[in-house]
Length: 304
Image (cartoon, rainbow, N blue to C red; front, side, top):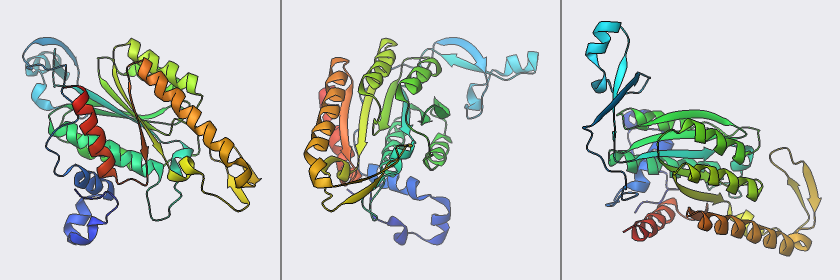
C-alpha cells in the first residue's frame, strides 16, 4: 500500500494537479487497495419508511425534495426517512495551536496527520454510501458540516480540512458538550486530537456523548518527540497555546516528563475502556497507511 508521506504529485499531469489537492490525493492513496470498510454497521436501514419533513439546507440531495409541498408553499422541504444511510459518522478534528507541532521538517505535523486520517476515513465511509459530517474545533466548534452522503460531500470535507490551525487552545469538554446538542441522531463519532487538556474533563465530555448512545472512536495523534523526549542539550522550549517559553536542561526532566505522559495516556485509555470507547494512539512518524490499516483491521476483528 502507498505511503502517506510520498509525493504522488510528480506522477500526475498539471491538469490533474489543478483539480486535486494534496490532502485529497494523500487520502485517496492511503485508502487505495482497502477491500473492507471502517465498520459493520449496527444501524442498517432500507430507506423506505417516511418519517417527517425538514427544511432544505445546502448540500442536501435534491432527489429527496418534496415537490408537492414546494408547489403548495413555495418552500423547499426534504423528505426524511427512518434510516437514510447505513451509518451517520461525524469526524471531529482538533485545530488548536498544539496540533501545529511537528518535530520532523520533512514529516507531517499532528494536524496534517489528523486531517489526512479524517479525509481517509471519510472517503471510506462515503464509498460505503454512509453519511459523513465534520466538526473542527479549538476552544469551540469553529466549523460544522451536517452528515450527508451527497456526491459533493467529499470535496466539501477536504476543503474544510485544509484550513490551518489557529492560535487558540483546546477546550475539549466544552466542545464535546456542544456536539451533544448539534448531533441529534445516533452516530459514530471519531475524535482526532492530541487530547492536551485535563483528562477528567475530556472523559466527562466523552461520557456525555456516550450517555446519548453515540458510538465513539478516540484517535490520539502524537509527535514522536512528544513520546520519546529525545532532547539532550540545553533547550529553549516555546510553549503552544499561550504557555510561554522555558529554557531547560532536558536530561534532568526526561524521566519525569515521560512518566507524566505515560500516566496521562493511561488515564485516558482506561477511562475510554470503562466507557466502552475505542482508544488508539497514532504516532506521526508511522506511515499513515500502515497505522490506519492496522487500526481498521483491529476494529473490524473486534466487531465481527
